[in-house]
Image (tube, rainbow, N blue to C red; front, side):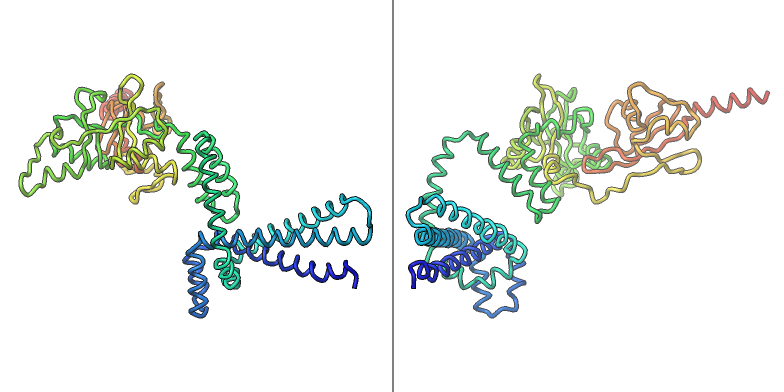
Length: 446
């Protein structure tokens, strides 16, 4: 038997074993990360008790499993590549003795690279992700051997790598680390197994750092406030009408913001079994307000809210004036999307209530409302009926707010959404305007 035949007899099986072991461990690595504990428990429910316990334990102890499997995969690939190289060089030495080593080296690189790409990377990982439960169940014996044999060297290498990474990371700029993490997440989000909603949520977490909190706030003109000398009873009526649970307390104006009033504190002041005082001024019930600059990243304000356990912050501009308020819900909406109120209704349509009275959406245009009463309504400053009501009253409309403008009687009816924005307005022709119409009709009859 020639030296080449002997080499093939030994090295080919060795290369196959190394490749198969590496491929299986690659699939295990992908499966370990792809399946959840609950899904795996359902998959192993019909397995024998010993097998079920081993699979679940290996999955739960993922740190040891992944470290051992990764080292085993590298060793398998090394054995395969070494065997392929030995085969190529042995064949070259026997078939073309005396020639250079460039050809067998090139052959080794091509064959090993192709096998590593097709057999050890793409196919096993795809199988591991798509059939994660089956892979973990069928490979439990091999994984147990890897965990027992390779755990000590794998943990030593992992600790060494962590130490080197920590040293390198300490010299790295925080912005560079954040950008690197962002790129890694972007690559992970390209996975087809990540749902659109989950992808948007993760993206929202990273976008939060680049978002100024002023972009999320309720601006100053939209704030519902209460005077510091108002009674607790009046404050409770405002809470009921507005739908808010926290309202800023002001002095002479909005810039003179004294504190924050909570509905639960007002209820306690009114209905206390020891000292019920409905006429108690809200300045005695309010809590201190928390302030922050409006040009601060939203994630920083979120951290401040979490540590202080105060979920509403007053934002001030560069001159010290009140710019608006922001709540923890406003920041969370940037991550998870709009948080709908359970009492919200769908966008209303114009509804004829009879007797010349209509229920219209607050966003309805003035021209649209004017057509209902054959009136030519126009205002250079605002476009909607809700805006007209706000402009006429000079404050944020809440349910029950009334005004007369441009020949119309307006009444705020309902709010919607977590921010309690005006949703519908009751509109009818103003009494003076109706009297003028009747006078004109009488004049024409005469």
